[in-house]
Image (cartoon, rainbow, N blue to C red; front, side, top):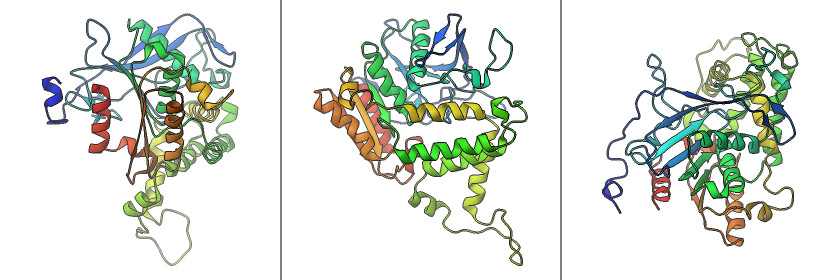
Length: 379
């Protein structure tokens, strides 16, 4: 054990500071699992820390549905917006950038600089819209592998992700076993339940039913904002837990005119969800939401044969973390992955954390989560 490992886990949370995104561009056609093709691939990404001479200290972080490449630090000096996992990534933090070279890219199909339905087709000069090919998690991982190639990295020290990021992490371990040193999948699962698919489709239908959607050919400045906001509100409910919502909001009310019926905000929880919907619309694309949620619904490690058959390709040691209050990707869905890996004689560990924040628990500061990730990366 070296001195940095002996030190307190987070003696003082360091910051990676100001970061600027980079763009990986491949001018070779990119082919999708379902047979579609785009003439050029672009992935926007950020890096933190430094790649060592041996190029064996790289960690890839995969983001969730509503996340992006801005994982840590500040990329806008005026807004001072911290990355979505800033408390986890940085010098002295569980994913320690004084030891590791950390990479996070916006996924293929995303709307924050990577090739997706809203990006411009280089041959037509117009957005792809619904002409963007049918998308899978496997396509996202294949695109990331090309980015890793461009950085001259043969094998990643680790791949880490939660939710949709956890699915990408598992796909990495399956498709590129020789390139993954270890992996951590949080709040994920081998496939969506029927309930998860139902929630996603309800959100998609809210977008499609919005008259501003226009069969996907909307003006980016005049898109289906109402439908997308409702989709986000619906999804956000699934990210929380009953205990967490009750503790935070309960039946707290706002001051309203009690003399007449109205359907505006009356309860604090309504105000919160409407805020979530409105803020999401300002940073996300409706077609991207359709594509990414559909890709998640298609993800199925039980197919084409069985879960054991799919996971037989995995060689890296893995840590899968479930959360007791997560009813979107419940603990048993995380646990079955490790049970399958152990049946196959693989090196796999399952950890279940008791937290009240629902599916979003992996995005919340928690000492136990810090320790799990720090320890597994340092093994």
